[in-house]
Length: 219
Image (cartoon, rainbow, N blue to C red; front, side, top):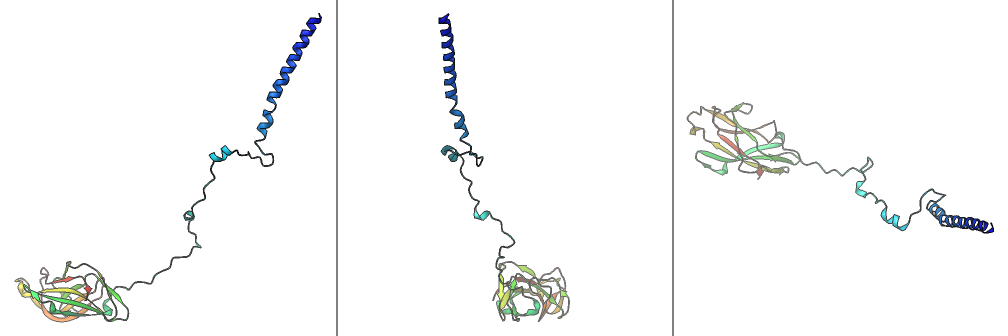
């Protein structure tokens, strides 16, 4: 009987010791897991390995900031001279270009008579007319594109020139010749015109072209 009691007491002691050992082994792990959260802030503390895996956000580049209404406006430049107009020009011809095969080559000169600079750009319109206020006679001048179009800046008193070719009316059998008092000249991109007195013969037949004109160049 005594030995049976001792066996029961030893078994209880062994079970109690095992339970205590299990409690001791499990006990430290619980407070260790609680230290990862700060009670004051509710945020987890970072270990060296976690901070390396999450780099800080890069600041946005300065050029990504959009312009606002308070940004200063860009500086404006002075306006360029406008196109020359008939009212500010005088016209003349210079026949020193000579002639060939029944044609006469002249320089059509337009001079700035105003007080401000202006620009000649491109081809003038040229026709033969019966008088200063008359309608054109025959076909207007065709364009001679052998010279490139350039901007010709005319200061007050300066001149731009274009090559004007006149073909003798007598070269054409079906010309139906008539007298012309001179030339009507439209500066490039202008609806007003100049009259240049220069009596010559014209063809009333509009299928015959007596004139050609080049683009203005610096004189």
